[in-house]
Image (tube, rainbow, N blue to C red; front, side, top):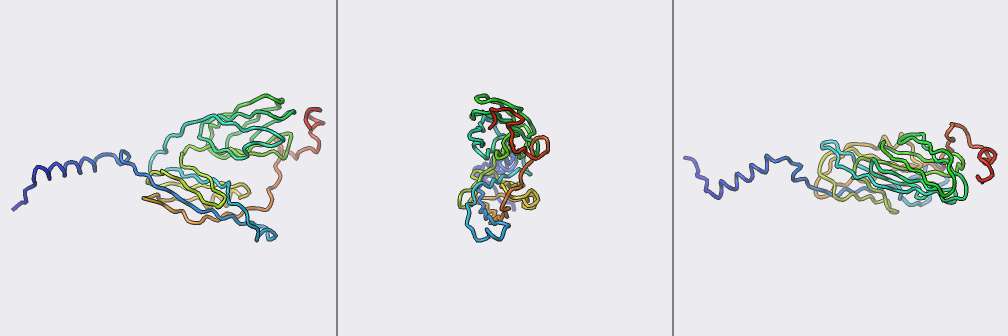
Length: 245
């Protein structure tokens, strides 16, 4: 003998069936992702020194679902007092970055490594040049005249990105449940080490902890070459004129 289903019970069963048949993306749930960064130094002379763990960038690239759309923006990376400000800039893929020269002398901003490659050429005080970062990745920015100038622009196609605090904590709120590939960047940490830390992670409710991530930094960063692949000249003014101190 079959058990009869009431009219109310039939309606409830139909609703459950409809919900199950609907695409899961229509009912996407979000979780909080946390991680703790720990910085160590490779040099013995600094092994006991305490240092802030800020400046580490962590992002998640979706694997199971298409990445959420990011909206390109307009940013500025200023040249002032022979330095870039800010030193680190994380932007959505496709964003434009202005490079205003706020010094009373020439600069020549370039990037010829990973990420977006460009050479803005020699340009004078008060002028601005703009670069569109349409290539995903990490761009190391330098000046061909002043070797002490450096900056980093990270262009990403995912909205799931965050930087570490002074205490080393990283918090990514509102991450859709799913499978991701974890990536990290930190200045002074070699690419091989960063690539080794990349891995697949499963984000679930209500919170996903990535645990403690330990990074080993070098005590010093090797000097970079100029845009010609050569060592910097001791006196740039001999090549670029008296307005280049």
